[in-house]
Structures are given as C-alpha cells and as structure tokens.
Image 1 (cartoon, rainbow, N blue to C red):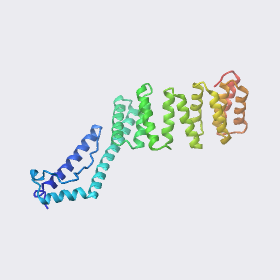
Image 2: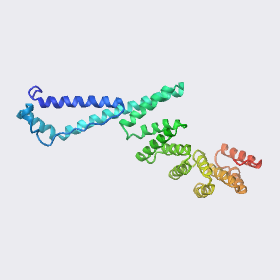
Image 3: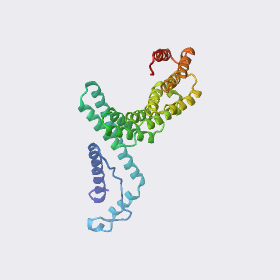
Image 4: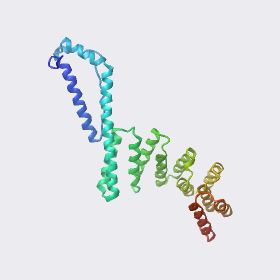
Length: 287
C-alpha cells in the first residue's frame, strides 16, 4: 500500500520525522521536552473533510492499536536523548581537562554549559550529576555555585544512596558553607556505612566541624563510641587526642597519642605524626 494512496500513512511518517528533528534541535539548545506519541482513541470525526478513505481509516486503527510500534518509537527517542546527554558529558570532561591544563576561563564556562545540558537532557544520571556538583564546588567564592553543588550531590544520593564520593563531596561543600553540623552528619554517615572510611581523610574534617561548632564534647562522645569498634585505628586515636587537647584534657590526649606510638598502630607516617603532635603539645601548642 503506497503512501500516495494513503495520505494518513504519509502524514504519520512525516510527523515522526518532524518529531525527531524537533527532539534533536531542542537537545542541542539545552532544554528538552520529550514528545510522547499520542493517538486519538476514536477515528477523526471530520475524516471526510481531510480526504480519508476507508483504507486510511483502517491504517489509523492499526497504528493506534499497535503497542509494539509505540514501544519501539519510545525506545528510539529515549536512546537518542541518552546518547546526546552522554556526548554533552564527555565534552564537559574535555573542557574541564583543558581548563586544568591551560587555565582559560572560557574552558571552564564551556564545561559548565555542557554538563548542565547533559543533566537537563538526562536528569537521572548520577555520573552527570556528580560531575556537575564537582564543577560548581570548584567555585568556592560563589555562594550560589556552592548551593548548586549541594543540590547536585543530594540528587546523586537520592538516585544512589551508597555513592561514597558524593556523600564526602556533600560534606565538604556543607563545611565550606559553614554548615558544620550538617557536614558532621554526612561524615558520620560515611563512617557508619563503611569501616574503610575510618581514616584521617574523614576524621580530620569531622573533628574540625565539632571544633568550629564549639561542641567538642559531642565529638568526643561519638569518637569514643566509634573507637570501641575500631580499637587499632591510629587515625581515630589521633583525632580523639586532638579533641581532648582542645578541651584542655591534656593528660587524656597524651595517653591517646602514647597508644599510637607504643602499640605501633597504623602506618609509620601515622606514628611519626603522633610523635610530632606530642612534641608540639609539650611546647604549649594545641594542634
């Protein structure tokens, strides 16, 4: 059955091509509204006015009831927009790499443009959202950018709650904004979820948050409970010592450092750091 004899088939095919052209155009403009295939539940009441013959009406009914065709159409559109989102993401990575090498502001601006386009096209990609957050977190002097970074990392965690990098980055951004209690909560979630995170990388900023909130006692309570589960963690004992020293509990702080040194907890670097702190505190320093 040719399209000349069946104007509706030709019209449906033309609409399909126009729809795809519209999708691609909107995608590259950075905002998209994916059109959904919608067909009338009934045959058009004014079919004769548009020249529909009986064969065309039957073709309309076939297209309307063919769910497999609709499914294929939807998959085709979905594949297209995900592919373009991925292309935008890779362009953003390339722009960011150039900015790191050359330091040109235009490259960073282009990276933001491309990653924002990728997220607008496909907002369900944790990879795209995480990179968006990392870019905005770079702009530490801009409160609006830090807020955007916070939103991006929260979106990642909504999609993937066990995303450790996003939770750590979220804690850092909250800390950068002076939201120390909220940051401490994120650091604690990391420590509770994964024993491998009981390191100075997480414990040191956590202690900083408690000290910045002028609430070292809450930090001491939490870290002491944590030490029962990780008794041989040099980083944990050293962090406890720092909080104790800042709470003027010098003898208790010295005991924590002594355990690291005498029991040879952790790496040699951690033991050397404990000795350095010990010597510094003997001279009257706190940190």
